[in-house]
Length: 189
Image (tube, rainbow, N blue to C red; front, side):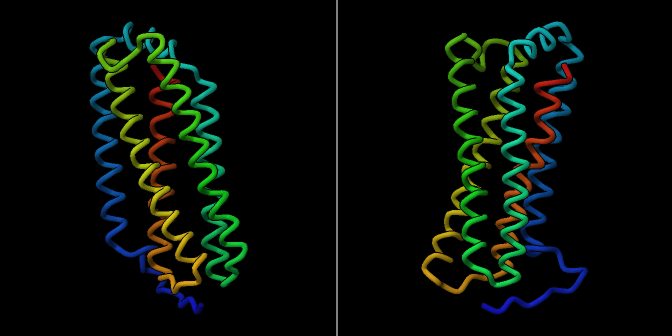
């Protein structure tokens, strides 16, 4: 598989994925600003609610996604070197990080629901559920996209480098969103 280098001014993955990433980050940013405004109105509720979260789960998930993002970056480098065997390995490691993130998040969600901390509990938990579930949906979509890349490569089908870069950019967006959510939800209030 031949990989052509792009111009230094060409965005990795193409302009469309960057429009999507910008819109997603904008959406999460607006939601976080709304959460901060609500926290200003109910500081005690937000502080006490944040204390009900398990920061260990959030920290583990942060490490999982950062590690997974690193593996994705390595996978892109192996695609550039046309080393499909190592590319597949790092793509699997990337997806494993995403799946483990979902497992930890599911355990965390279960403990919240068992404690009665659902979306209707208070304003903080409304934001908690809305933002983290929206992020989980993005992680699931990312895993589906990465799985499609994996199976295309596994079948030795031609893979478009720009599509792979776009997939990597989407995955890194999931990491970035979590890096915005984690401190705001788990640490600040």
